[in-house]
Image 1 (cartoon, rainbow, N blue to C red):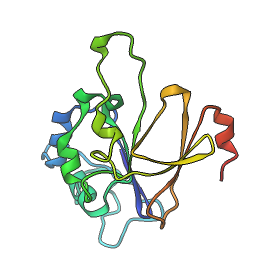
Image 2: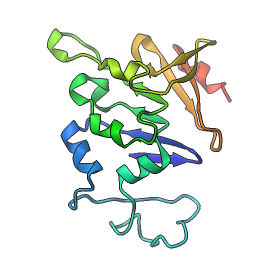
Image 3: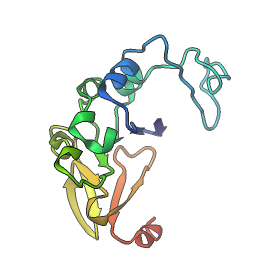
Image 4: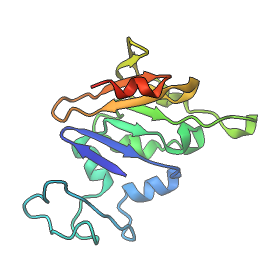
Length: 174
């Protein structure tokens, strides 16, 4: 799912494989696309873009044009789910911030989080408020019991990002 709010964008990749991501980015003719325009479709866009594939731009075109603010890393950020093709299409070569929904690792064969998501190699970085302390981060994670709040601000290029161990604390942040 790709979402845009003002100048900020979010891609939730789910458990997509690198091969499937490549097919989506290449605009495979078998792909179906659905768009919802909150506030009305732009001039020239057919009104039924939410029901059938017509002239909607593909993911590659959107990433090149709009960039990527937040990437919810595919497959919990594991090395096996890293898509180099995805990063080739993002306008600045990488998102502003990666979100890793860590899964529990019980055995060595459960996989390892790809280090590129957590460094300047995989993200531009932004300030993150972790338990009241601001620090530049390239990724945030649910590891260590953190809950994540990301506030898109529309015209401001970077979102506000908060990590708290107590989710109720996030409810009071505006």
